[in-house]
Length: 388
Ligand code: AMP
Image 1 (cartoon, rainbow, N blue to C red):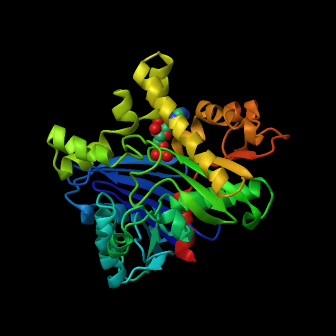
Image 2: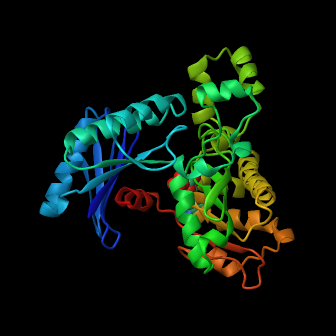
């Protein structure tokens, strides 16, 4: 069975084609600059290419992708199912689901909670269904894994009737990633997932930390939208809501401007004034630039704070796992976070942390709590969900 995984953004379309018999990646690529000019980058094994193409809209992007699949793979380009990454599944979807017209309407309606993501995901589904009408299309939601959060963890402190009326609650995101790395961590520590208390730290351009108890999400740092929690590349993370009032008032910002400010101009970028990219933040911090040092320290501090709170939420922890761009690659961030967890009995294997590659344990043999690095694989999780 060959499964195509699609992730549609406002001006881009990421695609991965898997052969599910052995879960191998046949082809991956990115169509970008949709509506601007157009660029198609792809790779198949060691081969890769880049093409400039005119892409006025998402339908043209999808057509270019299908043409590429046929040109590179011939009859092997036949797709049996499409898995769509959908950011928000709202209150209704605690599982991946076959996309019917009703499901698509719900995804569009949940733009209420994910205005920057769901409309693009829905657009991707529409054009993919039009281009590939004879195969099942499945929505895999970033929020679904967190549906097991207990009510006391997901309810905000506003009048209860308003929460019920509008579905205002903590939903959480990066669900495919947290689920994947939790399952891999269980394999690394050679214990059943259902017996483990895990804290998974997805630290990338977007960041969320998750308390995974006995295989289920108990709590996570993101909220109704992906804006809450740890500071991120350009997102502010948790704020006192009154700050929004003050900025609207003093800076004369309208709704759109404040949304833009909190989503695109805040976080590591807004604090450092250097970049949203953590590599550049680390380099600037090493060069002694005070605001870059501050941005780096806040990220580390926020991650520690969530780890500490999730230890208490789960009455303990067996393993802590790092994933995503920063979590997988910054040995210094991991060391700095773990340096403050010695009271839990965390002891790093400095060599494995610094010099090791890929999926591995980075804790010392006598560490009371296991610490792991697991490169995430959200696309594979979406493909697996599609098959399931
Ligand atoms: P992601 O959103 O998971 O792709 O992660 C992107 C983030 O990972 C960016 O902030 C990158 O700077 C960061 N990143 C990628 N590689 C490294 C690295 N070798 N060291 C530190 N940060 C990295």
